[in-house]
Image (cartoon, rainbow, N blue to C red; front, top):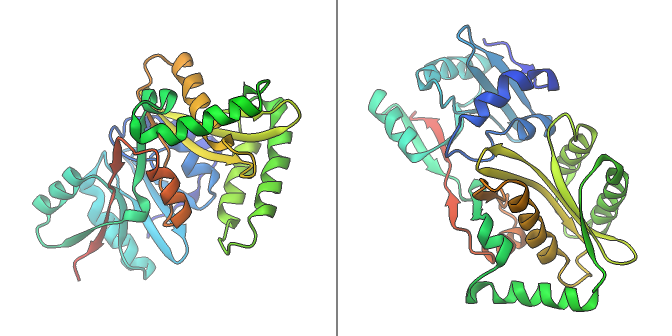
Length: 294
């Protein structure tokens, strides 16, 4: 059985370059994501290839070793020794085709809609062009009319205490819909705790009298920024639209080479799916799940 240890900040020098080379892959291939959820562990092979084991109840799964697909039988053996079903996630369609070519008929592949990442061009979210985004522009316009003195500030360590308090207020206001936010709550706390160490960036939205939204994420490729968390006061009309638009503008100015914003998946939550679909993603990144054929 392979030995996996919980991912810590000391793994960043090994894992982050590996994640950055995962061109075309989804938000799972991000050191920050692997760290702050607190449910992933890593094993380094003799050749230095990281193998990732994730436990998100009710499943235990492996992240596809994109740089060394020949290690797939090793993962299959490890799963058998652990007495768990083999589940490997994060494959792109061409990687699934390569696995089938190498081991015909031994694995089956599933598209998991709930795990598909919503990817947008920076320009799309920064400018909200087109008839299909007219409603978003209207929300922004109403916010700007109601709060002419609003401001959006880069997220700094000095602003984190206010964002922590705002997060707790947000969760308190969403206790009645039945959604289990415990995992996300832990992840966002760990992201706050290691904000600088993880290279997190973000923005906070203020009306003249208070904080009404914030967002944060990290750049996972030179041309791709991953938006990990976004919270806004839903009673403030346009707060979500403004923080989304103005953060895209902030990133565009900071990183001229940036092309895409990955706003991650919807976790199968109907409201979140509607919200992300309403921005009409340029790409719905399909990530495949691999299982043993028998």
